Length: 101
Image 1 (tube, rainbow, N blue to C red):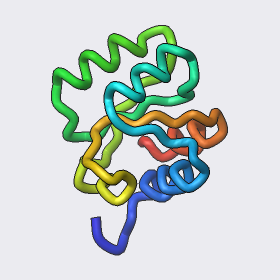
Image 2: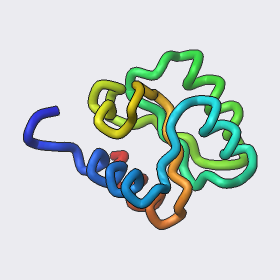
Image 3: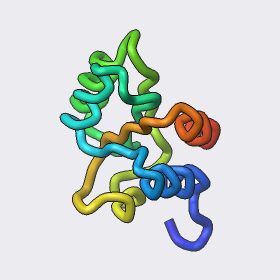
Image 4: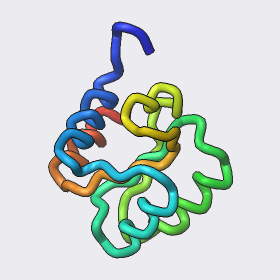
């Protein structure tokens, strides 16, 4: 994703800098089940199994949305590739949700 960076990537970068971005399936799921995540985001190329399991785990607890960004697009946010992200701040979650469409 070259020079015309997706606004969602900028919003996620802001979440990371604020210390309000979790990544990785297990960590996000654990915190979501504890009510500590305001929004769960899945990479566009997350496996069907990951999408199904995470949506099932989040159902009735927290919104779980698929992003238009791939794990390659999101690589700059994490030390290791991740397809599952959680935003722990309600206001930052709203900012990210605004850029999903």
